[in-house]
Structures are given as structure tokens and as C-alpha cells.
Image 1 (cartoon, helix red, strand yellow):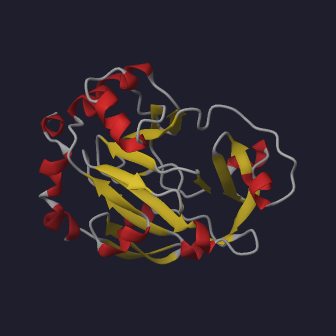
Image 2 (cartoon, rainbow, N blue to C red; image 1 turned 180 degrees about the horizontal axis):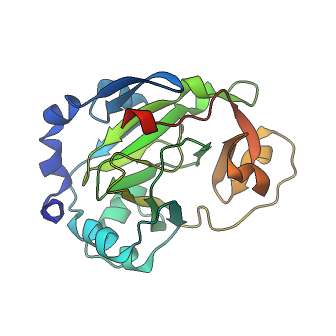
Length: 242
């Protein structure tokens, strides 16, 4: 695919064109606007990372990872860890700390849950994808009102940092015929096990996996797995916006 010849800098030059395709329609969750990661509003949630080649990572995502009808997540994929781009990029992103390159792939239009880590997460897609985001500071009395959730589209081949203070979850596809294949880069050990706590505060109640604090909507399947019910309002579904 031609996108594999691009690096982050090349795609950033097209930011002006991407902004023109913002969607704003009525949906079952009211009026939600899908903005671009190049819009100024995204600066509160994350940033675009430039300067590093990502061609081999994109090629590996495309050729060596699945795209199911639902959603699959793998915390660390050996083939992604072994690309020619991985060492230099991972060292830069995490400042020399151990890191893991995995993926989240498939088809999805719903929010279901919101999570955060103590560190930034980095995403990179082989196709355009949409992130549903909120702020950690939007949580009040242990609950997040889903009306606080916003949507941003990321173009294929552009590396995105999602700040540690930003709530997020599985990406959504921008095109159902293509789905999404998205790199999930995190500190090593994230999402790979569970940790017992003393259960003394909200952090303890929402800790769902290692370095993963999770708030679930009552309709999310994660509730059955013991996730904390921490999202009020509608379970956002952007199917009508794409």
C-alpha cells in the first residue's frame, strides 16, 4: 500500500486538507462533532509525534496482524517489536524505559469503557481511525458523564500521543469496509496482568489490570468481568456519524 512510503512528517503536511472533512451530524447521543487531531482542541488531549519513520511498523501491522469483525487487543507483538523502526522510536517515545508495541484491531463504533494509564499511550493506524476521549479531570464523585466524551479522527500513518491525563479506550473505525489496525505503544508490563490492592480508594476500585484504570458503562461487557461501573449517560455509538 502506498501509505507505507510515508513517514509522519510527510502526512503532517496534509493537515489542512484533513481538517475540511470534519463530520457534524445528529446521532443517538445528541450532537457530536468528529474533529481532527490537527484541530486546536486536540492539544488538551494529546499531540502528533513527528520526525521518525514508521513505514516498517505500518507494513507489519497491515501484513502480520488480523482485523476481525469485533475487536482484538495484543499487549506486545514480537513482530512489531522487531521492525527496523521499533528500537529508535520506542527509545524516543519512552525516554529509555522498557516499552511494548502491541495492537488493537478490528471494527468498533462504541465507547463502552474509558481507561487511563500513568503514562502516555501512542497510536498509529494503517487506516484512518477515530478516538473517543475525555479528561481525567472530568471524573466527578467517581463517575464520568458520557456527555463529556469527544471524538477525534486520526489519519493513517500519523503517530499520535494520548496523554496520561486523557481517558480513552478501543479505537473506532472511520470506514467499516476497512476496519482499523492500530499500534498500541505503552510502557512494558501494561495490561498484562492484575494487581491486588488494599481497596482503600477510587484508584484501587478502578484498577482493572497492570497500569490500567478502567471505568465501564453499565452496558459494557467488561462489567461482567468485574469492571467498575463509572460511566453515566448513554453508551456513545458513532455509527451514525461515519
